[in-house]
Length: 159
Image (cartoon, rainbow, N blue to C red):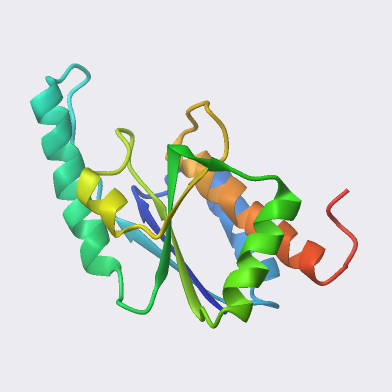
């Protein structure tokens, strides 16, 4: 299965870059992985609701342009469904058995994902009701995809 991670914002700190590189290397044994980094919109500290929606809309347009028709799109969103690691493994395995060959995970910017992006998503996944920085979320997501693959194959790691 091909896995694409579409994310808003660049990884600036070396420690995030190293963690992403490590999990990307590990995942390379199982999946063809692509990470697409998109520019985030410059946003002042205090914005009106309309300004926030405009930022999400602009970032959302970039995300939608990066998606392909054949992708099964999973949006990371607080309002999504929470799954255990084992449930995520079973979910991804079922998608593969159903013939899905390309999964895209979406990580929005600091304000989240636009309504248009959420409408395009085939599934909304939440890792927690808490908010995480998008740099950290990228590492957590990669680790969980790697963990899911190890669980599916019955390989040690997930305990």
